[in-house]
Amino acid sequence: MGWLDTTPVLITGAGSGLGRAIAERFDAEGARVVAFDRDPVKLADLREWSLGRIVTVQGDVTSPEDNAKAVATAVEEFGGLEVFVGNAGIWDFFRGLLDTSPEDLARGFDEVFAVNVKGYLLGARAAAEALRESHGSMIFTLSNAAFFPAGGGPLYTASKHAGVGLVRQLAYELSPEVRVNAVAPGGMATDLRGPGSLGLDGTSITDAMPIKELVRTRSALRNDVEPADYTGSYVLLASRANSSTVTGAVFDISAFGTPQRPPAQ
Ligand SMILES: NC(=O)c1ccc[n+]([C@@H]2O[C@H](COP(=O)([O-])OP(=O)(O)OC[C@H]3O[C@@H](n4cnc5c(N)ncnc54)[C@H](O)[C@@H]3O)[C@@H](O)[C@H]2O)c1
Image (cartoon, rainbow, N blue to C red):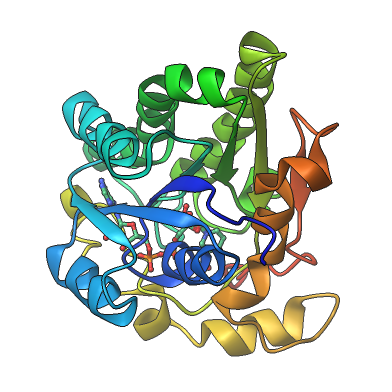
């Protein structure tokens, strides 16, 4: 018996990094997982890893139709939905205000906010009715950048701060049936990419910088962090039995582990 036995869950951005770690952990806790991602190769790997237990949906979180398809899949396959995890995100690779042209700022804003904010909003909209029926919950992945500067540039930091507002507003609107919370992890070595409109989709955070080392030396706990190390808070928030009084909360589990842009020379 796990903490999430037979709980139907939907996780966006479950193809790699933190989303995949959450999918694996929820699977180990007995949940019935639908993994939603835009990358079919990553989804095929997850299906194979889970020996078919995890059901996958390929689509884009910025599309209302794709979000609806992902929720419908959970309802069809598992009879309902109890937990929606909004997690798919992109980063801005520390692109600062003054080293980004106004045109790039406009393009980058549209793309970063489309995934990090609109994607969460549309996912919440698609899942809300099913979660009302099940008295379920939503959990969003935020970041150290939801609280502090220097975890990205203004595009990413503003998008993750916007996520805090989304959690509070949705927790208020969807109460008392649906709990809405967020987890704010610190840096980790993943396949995290940036907006294609700024040419930042070709490299991952892991290839661009020694992210593990940066987190180890800058986090208060000085540990070697893997995405799986952040998944416990998701299990807690997904488990109604263990967090029935929690809504509108953002768990900051970053230990101040921001990548931190080097200061200007
Ligand atoms: N890596 C870090 O240092 C770090 C730190 C704090 C917070 N986060 C947050 O963690 C979350 C997960 O990121 P990660 O680091 O695991 O990166 P990742 O790239 O490994 O995982 C993100 C997944 O989302 C998918 N995705 C991206 N855009 C999508 C879209 N439009 N539609 C559908 N799927 C899409 C990608 O294909 C990928 O599989 C993000 O919200 C990110 O902001 C990451």
